[in-house]
Image 1 (cartoon, rainbow, N blue to C red):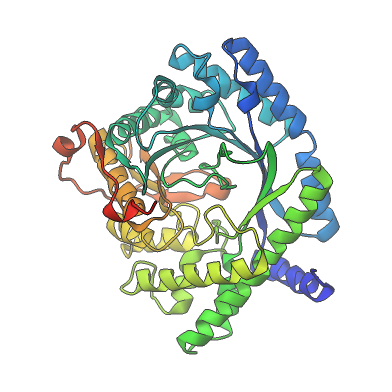
Image 2: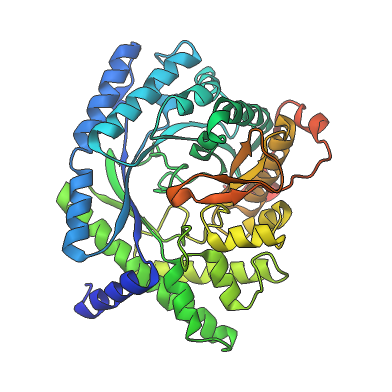
Length: 454
């Protein structure tokens, strides 16, 4: 049970330390919408989403008011659309109609974003998978709320290098298609290794095929709460440091558990998971990078950063799993550049580079997240960066991802504004040496030897 002491403590974290519930995400299965006729699929998809999620936003607001807990976003994730549209779609533009249907449905129920315009191609691509991927630039530039993800690799299957090569080309195309808006639509696309089926955070959320028909997943945040707690133990040893992070993560996760339980009860759908990721915002005091500085680094990116982040991530997980029996999704520390003022400062100071972010991926939740790179970066170089990130996830048996933004017409030293929660980012330099001959090879990189555990 959650007692009055915890409620009072939570109120203080909300008022003083930027604690919020980042999202209530309703996962909806669309498997029963599959049909050979495209118009029928679109109708079924629209009806299923609007029927299931009709009360999502109002219930979220009701919980906010009842418990005085800010819930920043209400979102939807659906079954990967490559699976849903495969029987009806004959060309990429057919899939775009499904993206527009998702967008209309999301607008109708009032959610911020809808995820699941996705394909799972870690071992190979069906014709439907390839058509959906090729439709992504048009789909994302012609919709407002739709988010897209592609799973390119896994520890069990290896890395689909044909998919990696294609995604480099698609990201370049998407960058140019939204060039008039600083390539902003790229932030709605993420590529994964070992993508989780129950992630409530965008752009990577989709509703896995093993999930129930409708579930409620909650994503909590709270970098500011952890930072504030660590201020009280400055100079203490690592044991005290770890215990403080763990206890704080426990409290933050309890907030998510409360919201998830109430949302599940009020909406009448089962509770799925709480994702206890430390998800920063551009707000001052709500930064994962600032936590690393509080631990003892001059800037995120200084020597010791990877060790400090590993400790932070581990203690967050340990505290969270004691607070809820159903912790899932990504659950750790996000290090998006544009969404974290401390990371922005570190990038501008030259303390953090693309290569250091890649190293930090080994111990955090996602990886190269919301990283702006020069618009003239070649498709093969983008694919090479993606391949490196996929390899880290595959070998380390963890989720890794890339959300790269090649900003058309801009270069190193310039910045790009995304607005709102997405913040702004300095454009980071990319290694100039070519990997084109590597990327143009066909096939896949096989799974590592330690993947054979059957």
